[in-house]
Image (cartoon, rainbow, N blue to C red; front, side, top):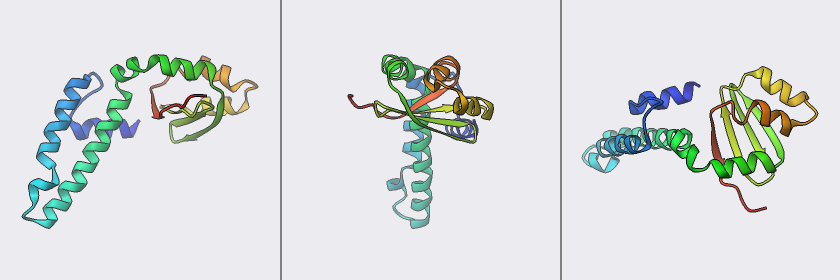
Length: 148
């Protein structure tokens, strides 16, 4: 996905970067581009503010798709994908967003339109998603689930 590549380029990391290293890179960038560092020039301060927003967004996104993060929350993900019902889903570009009955929302990346069309047309969307989506595509949790 383009967004993942853009965020990795912005921070100068790759798909094998561990969370600890990602955090170090993030902190170093924030030290360099923190708006308070540029109090003498309003234009430089605004530029640093925009750059720091981009860095923060990239960091949080990359943390959410990192294998270490996904491993940490695999039980929650498994519970959601095996017991919660799909309430709604949307496909935009190559991103599939699925809303579950437990309040969780997950984004799946690089999902071809053909998979989305099949998801629309199957009798059991949950069964299809368990077989062809949940463990086949890179994902991230957009919202935390709430107790049912």
